Length: 488
Image 1 (cartoon, rainbow, N blue to C red):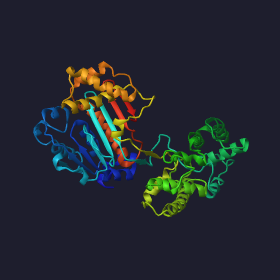
Image 2: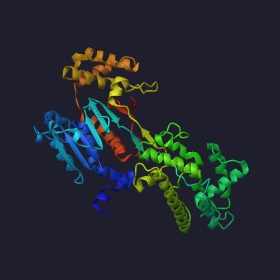
Image 3: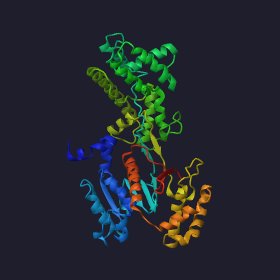
Image 4: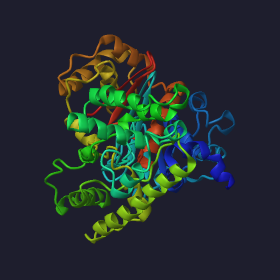
């Protein structure tokens, strides 16, 4: 194992070696060196993002020294992009970077995996973008991606396709090898999925159906498992309690349909014409596989079990064999369409997550948000005043070339009133407006640190295509530590 692998070991346990590879191959552009963007980039340099590019025309001022840890007093008067880049690269020698003055940088000449717009807005609809804004004790994160397809949504209750309820023939033969009337030593080492399969058969014999509801699984099926364990002393029946703890692994054959509900409007009416990229074609191939074989391709994941080592290895080899056979067929189906060639590893990753929910997020653009924001009666209004005020101060600054002060409360209030009409929202409270005017454009590092930490997490989700990022706006109030998420 190399030093680099060891350094990133803990985070690789979260997003895997393939996720770390995506991160190390990613290139990120930071526009503007205000504190929130720098804090975000810092939290991406540390886990080993590949390349960073920073663009900024401004020079380090005393104000920068006060609110930005990466613009020290000793570098006063130097270009902010150069100073920030040099100090960030000291944090991780694996990362490479460049800096530019804005007048010498043309975005059209580059391709980035992610652009961080720090207190600026750009007119781009083909790039992944995180917009950041902080103002006093308030901060905003706004995400935009043309389309974000997420295979590894990583839900809290990850679902595995172990085919306990509908075993393939070779797995059924394995289940039949175990004797529930044997010795205590034999019974207490029966793998829990064998116990679950036995309990399902007994349930179906008694009720002429499979267990589906919560009570059927956690009351009636649980009792059957407890009855099966009666011949085993309590201190030896760990495998039976494992079976009870893993009852949720019993999933119907149709469980895979939930993984596609966010991809296709109607999974029963999908054609090849609905496939515009490799992800949707993979989903369409999954439909074709299930229509042919009645279930999705086999996954390789197998949880730990209290059983004999030889039984566990036999079971693992059995699942691996079936997964390999199903993968060959699935690959043939995908390649038969002759479109969007992909690597085998990506296809295998897709198959491993077919029982979890795939996500396709199509973000609204900033222009759509400003012209006609989405309205939702279920919005958390706690931070909606701050969202409106963050927009209002930018409008004020663009109009008067300065931020509002306490003498500008009425002018800022007029702008807020115009914005609230878009949301059918009551007027912004005067106390909020006064607080905003009191800041006069103040940037606080403690708020930037919070925003930067959250923004870097969203950035990693976008880059690795794992977990589910926000859609699309997060507002943070440092006055009470409250966070709200809106889709505008």
